[in-house]
Every structure is written in C-alpha cells, then in structure tokens.
Image (cartoon, rainbow, N blue to C red; front, side):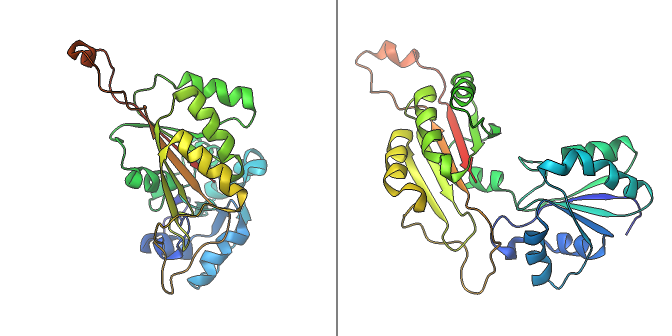
Length: 269
C-alpha cells in the first residue's frame, strides 16, 4: 500500500454484508482507521477478522483532530476514514480531514460503497434524475420552516436526513411549506426490519403521529435475511415528496398553466 494516503471508505448502512471487498482490503492494510464511532466500526472489523489501530473522529473533535491526522499522513502513514454508516462526508464528519490532506499534498482516494442517500433515491419511485440533497435541516422550528420555504419552488427532487424522533415535526413543517406532496419514508434500510412508507405528507404525518416514537409498522419485507449481519446503531427514516396532484381542469387552457412536476425527498436518522 502506498505511503501517505487518505482513503475515504464507505461502510454498510445496516447490513454488514454490504461492505465491498476493496473496503475490507484497505481496512486491513492501513496504518490507522479514523472512525466516527470506534465501537461501531469495531463491530465491522471484528466480523471480518480485522485488527487495526482506531482513533475517534467525530463532529466535536473533527477540527482539532484533523491536523494531527494530516501530520501522520505527511509522515507517510496510510489512514482510512470511516463514518458510523455509509459514505464519510455526506452529513457525516470528513470535510476538514479531506481538505487538510489535499492542502498538504496527500493523495485522497475514494473507496465507494453503501450510501443511505443513493439507497433512498434508488427505491423512492419519484423523478430523481436530478435531485438536491439538503442533509439535516435546522432543529429550531423557525429556522427549519424558513429553509423549507426557500425550497418551495425548487424543481428538483429534495432529499433530507432527519432524526426519527423529529420526523413528525419535519413532516408537518414540510407539508406547510411545500404543500401536500407525495412522499416516501424509509426506516432501517438494509436491516431486518426495513420499512418503506409511501403517501402524501399529510397522510404520512398522521400515520407517524399514531405510531409515535416506538416505530413504524408496515408490511414491507426486509432486505436483510437469514444469517446476514447488521450494524448496530440508530434507525434511519427517509421521506420523499412530490408536488400535490392538481384536479383535472374544466377548460383545456388550464392544462398549460401548471409548471413541471416537482419532487422532494427526506431521510431521517
């Protein structure tokens, strides 16, 4: 393995079988693994018989720890950056380390693989040839409402991440700002209890309010079966919405008055 390389390694978002052969090889060979949660990463490493040094690299320490890791890279060490689940840098730590490595002339190599973002978009069943990823919205009510209002006229599909405990509030705010569009909500993607809900924002909001924080009950079959492993950690819920359908116009001229169909998507962890 070349010296002084930062590998940005995608890891499973739930089902441990989703890790790539290349990712496993890199994790076995690097000098250090910078992990968002060392405990969760160790589960993956242990399953595949990998023993490498780990260092914590999460939001609260990212700015402080990035320069230290860059110094190791400059000294010739190879480092793998991993997040809790999925691809680092997508609503997860990674930006400061990647920028620091590039500024120091250290090669940065992607090791692609699982991503909650692409997993959601691939099954949403909504127009997503072009989409906008918004990540996590502000948690404060006013700031969240303002951001959603700014997106009301966006013609592309919208994708969000949101904590499951805030999903009901997000759906209500999205309906108020975007209208009662069609939506897709996914939870525990790739895990044994994977669930995908579809409907309008209002319908989904009512359904989530009924089940509360205990979970979402649907008949969607699991994508993680048999002896396959699962990563531990929080649940993931995803929602995708489209502009509300118009009633058929009574005059043909009204057919020309509407704009292109808009779509929005949201995902919550």
